[in-house]
Image (cartoon, helix red, strand yellow):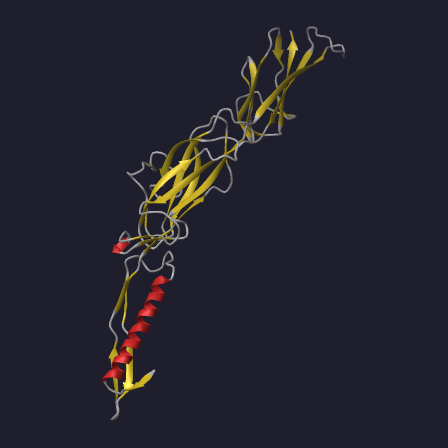
Length: 337
């Protein structure tokens, strides 16, 4: 825009109008909500407006407004997110059960947070016994016992730069009385040490760089719930015997062959770990070499690559981890002496 110079009064009018416009524009920009990864708290924003005009005798002139300087306030926002893809599976009575969370600084300044947990939330089947909050010291996103640091409020409160995140782990014990399928939840909270409140609350002079600290949409406090789930597998174990005597009958006489069948059925949910079946050869009988089987397949008597063996006094079969709903069947034969 160009102005015709009409003397001192006109020039002053132009200058004042431009100053008002510049101030309004700067104030509008300052009032816009700050965003993470946006302008850092404490940043100075300055600008000067220029007006040009034509001189009566030809040529042009110009005039600059005063400098308008503003300082960006610190916006305080924090979020907490549960990192585990689904319920963390554990067994009743287990200790050191791990929930994983991420804390993110969504504001535009460096901020420290006080962490806390809540377990008696209601709406679940049991309350985990929370033992510790652990910070991901080496930043690899995984829990490393002896490397990652146990959190102590007021001592090692995490300080995050804008947009920075940190992994945090909550370790709990699960109650012995919990039953199969029960769920329990624990909550992790992160609270800004500068302050909390309704969005827009301002703390004068407490922002990074000397400006104000303004509470953002999260109220300066983030929280998230994580869940544990009990999987409690059990095994039903049944032994039976079938007899074949030398005469084609089922009499229990010397020379008769006894076939023992050992059936292990896993129920509940999850997996029963390291299941092993052993049985002694009864007194008054002799083991029939090569008679050991697992689920109908022959096993060798030697302690070798297959899971079965005969050690001279009895048989042993390592079934490994057996999932709920599965039945594993072992058979072997003895002869009545």
